[in-house]
Length: 306
Ligand code: CAA
Ligand code: NAD
Image (cartoon, rainbow, N blue to C red):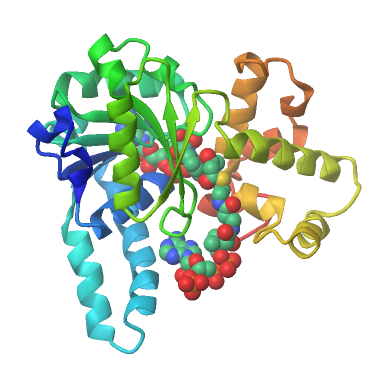
């Protein structure tokens, strides 16, 4: 539980509560994991329909967890799923969700203006000592928070989870130059408290994992475009020849091709130290798939059909 914040300013607020803004694959996963570890969570999205999708995602994933936890006891499985879900409230109001939260984690689509606008509203609503965090894959944390007050910036950090959140152990804790040590310590303790492993890093494009993963994904797409091999053979090669759990095209489809396009286009245009870098230049194949709404697993088609 958020003993994490016991020594911090946030201890004066209702720190058991976590608000997650954006109930897509990442937000729903984050809400699920926080609720599993006894936090009261409010999940926010733009419509009731989107919230129901998030809830269905959590129920399905919790069902998998429950089967492993109670292999021979269907009733216990059901109780576990219901109990965790009972700690997740659904809302379409970020201000209401953040009003009593000790930690607010934003996981909406990868768009800087949208994220800045959301945090402007959250800063007006969240308790003074709350930690405000973004799950962005590629945007500078300092830029997302640039319009906020100095006090808010001190407790504004990146909390970067990995997909699928219930299964992936890592969370990158991204510190800006303005964040204070207490906020980083509180975030690290929160991450440990939900059963994950933190890696603290600086606010640079892609942090650690994506700075290494995106060049690999883009080079894979270019191999395909050059006709070196089929997507299936490239995937088989990396799984069987390099021991990766998924091949690059399976992983691109899993992450979401829109998210990948947002990342590389953003870096190619204005990434610090990356602008104009050929590695992140547009790919005709990726652009075409995204233009046609083939975004990967979440839309039923990407490099593969599902
Ligand atoms: N919810 C709960 N449990 C899940 C799950 C989910 N959504 N997805 C998988 N699991 C569990 C399964 O229940 C299973 O558990 P056990 O081994 O304990 O039985 C385990 O994960 C393995 O699942 P499967 O057997 O179904 O399939 P798999 O062996 O192929 O593993 C995987 C699935 C864990 C996703 C694995 O393929 C993998 O690690 N892939 C790579 C994922 C990755 O690289 N993610 C990072 C993407 S980059 C990113 O997220 C950052 C960004 O900003 C873009
Ligand atoms: P997604 O498309 O599955 O979900 C985004 C959700 O945000 C949708 O449910 C959408 O309705 C909601 N949303 C849009 N505008 C909103 C608003 N104004 N208020 C509240 N909700 C709003 O996307 P995702 O894959 O979950 O990615 C979300 C964030 O997490 C992005 O910043 C992405 O870069 C990052 N991320 C993604 C991955 C990944 O593998 N997909 C991994 C780590 C981080």
